[in-house]
Length: 315
Image (cartoon, rainbow, N blue to C red):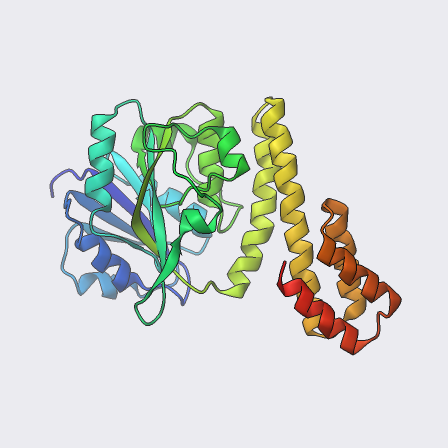
């Protein structure tokens, strides 16, 4: 088999995997010099892969150790000059490899090319907003602009399925193994702190499923907070550290408000009041303050709790 340019890495780790759809999206690439390495943590991937009869796809059965560890295991046997990570229920658009490899070859100073992504639904539809727009990016600076750590911390969200030079990946040490769902975020943060050159190609060249599993979202929130706590330790830049602390306050605010909504859904006004109080300790917002006052005056009132729940939905 010819030497691949791309090593596409994935891990099958749960019942939600759609390995066949991912494989279809990889085989549909307009640039065909790739290998797909599948780490199978649950069993069954071998039969799916054999059905394609494509020697570029390799499967390794490995005991369950989590997505980050699985990706690193795949990278250890990768032969390409560029690595791309894709979850087994996500996909790549046909021109992902062609567009990103062209830019890396044209710009040898660039270490990573990231892209935008679009959400797709069970019925085959797509969301109106992209990953970066959902993350708050309102204006794209253009490919010629290297992302800074300060920008990243302040809200320049980067989609995890990126084209990463193999040398850059191995120099940085690969994925963290203890931050489920935000492994890519932490990888990018470490690279930026070390001065690596990351650029954004603002084209929707990947896809992810929507809506998100609520259980996965809760794991994400916890890992997201842990990641930003670590990011503060990566730099001595006072402006970046201040931005990280502001981001952490924002994360804690939204986490507490989410828990308050859950409590009110169960008519637990006392717990809701405590969570709103914790949110207001992070930053003041008028509607949560009104809700807190209402719940403090009458914590047992179901009617007031339901009214408060409707107010919280707008936050």
